[in-house]
Image 1 (cartoon, helix red, strand yellow):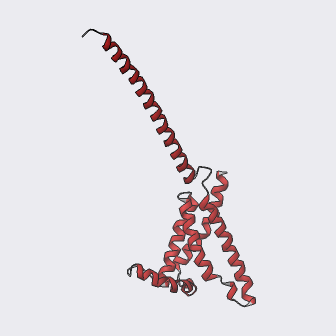
Image 2 (image 1 turned 180 degrees about the horizontal axis):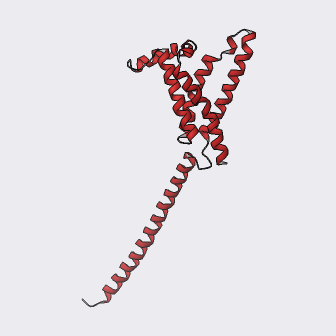
Length: 184
């Protein structure tokens, strides 16, 4: 299954890498479309820290750069789950801003609906990549089993301590009995 996973991640990540590079080199082509989202996000960013970039062009470039980095991580097989989460999180506002087919006239609606559904399919693939543990146990499984192992270890230690205490108590009782029989 490893070659299939690798190929699927490469195919999924490639679209974000190529698109991210293209947009990073020419962000102006996406700024007007992005303003639908950035106009709502910019005040929040400025409240967090006024030094952070909050203009539409900078945010478009940042999103493009994050797409390239996360796409390369996905393609390379490193940090695939966090990379897929980053790509999925960035895909949602991009899709809503770029393909609002529900607000368009009938002739435009068909084309935008196809792009919207394509992005929805990409989102599904990213969600699968984000949840894929590659056949290894997930964090929840490993955590619960670590707790079980530690409880068993504690139980074994307690049983061992009880056996040792019983053995020492028998030895002490035998010593006391012998000591009473000895002349003073």
